Amino acid sequence: MAPANPVPFDSSTDPAPGTAPQALREPEASANAAALEAAGGPEPVSQEELNAWRRGFTPQAEIWNGRLAMVGLSMGLAVLLLARLAGHAG
Image 1: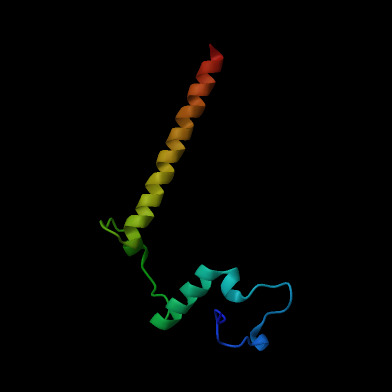
Image 2: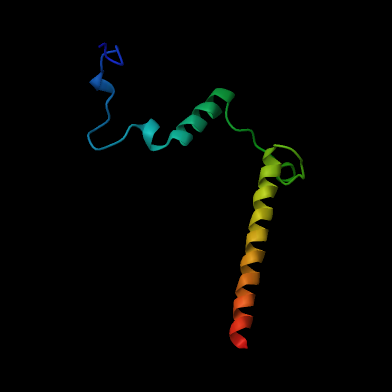
């Protein structure tokens, strides 16, 4: 049976013992950094553009989705807290 990887192992690229390679420690960070580097870096966005009410799968829609989800979660927890406090008063 042939080995799964015919390429010989190169120990010169191994990290120090007890540490994980950079790609295993932060896979999203290294992928995002590589994508930003290839694209020429992040583009600065104005505050008005960031808070714009845009529909569809846009960064602005995701920001508003998160904000409204936090408002809904906070309101739900407040209602539960008030209902619990009102139940103990009687």
